[in-house]
Amino acid sequence: MTDSNSACLASDNGHKCPRTADVLLPVALCNAHRIEVALAIVPDMLRDALASSLTSSVPAGGVRDDLVTMATATPIEGLLGGAHDSIVYFIANGGRVKIGYTTNLKGRISALSLRADSVLLALLGGFELERALHARFAQYRNGDTEWFELSSEIFHYASARNAAILGIAPLPAAEVMVGPSAATAARREKRKARAFRVYADLGQPSQRAFIKVWRERKYGETDQTVRDLYNEMHTAFENARKGSAGESK
Image (tube, helix red, strand yellow):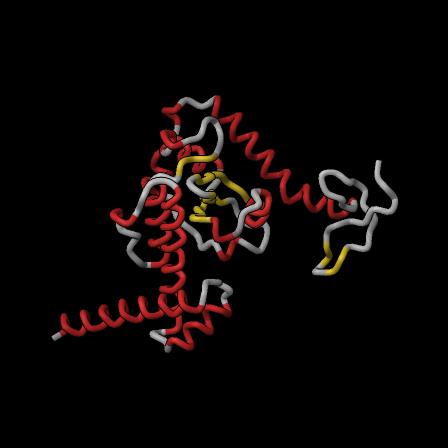
């Protein structure tokens, strides 16, 4: 039963919803927004339930480890607009990482009350790949959930696949620590990957041009951090250029 004076707390394109709430718990929503929330969350919940049911009935020997080895990463930024083809995601939260699959990464991030920069990796694939990954990293799994300890092995797996689509080397093993610090290392690597992409796209730009594009892409970070990233990329590209020039003599 609802209070006829209760307003829907959702918004329509940035404006307060003018409709009366049809439900009050857990949040006051009109019928249209209640359906919108259900469409974003319920399909993934049903897929998770199905995956759990199927996994419990499949022998361990049936897991295809080749799927884990051959899995291909896809840029995370291109998945944040809404529905998309099925992907397997690695979402970090402190010293843990959730490995699951979805066709709406944006909705899944929202359902977990996390931010987009919590996503460490997105792989092309669905239930079979998810199941294979769960088997590969079983020793780090928290019970029967999709949450795993963010171990150095899992971090390196994500790092190597992200590096492959960017054409750069993954973070050296010596720089990775097990536990919460691995999440910090993941974020540091993600910043470097973005800096590499911006610098390469602009073709060795000035610091001002680099910062301008960084801000246009809404990558965040403090001004000093962005300057430091530019300097790091500039030095790396200059060293690579000098090395290539030396080899050609």
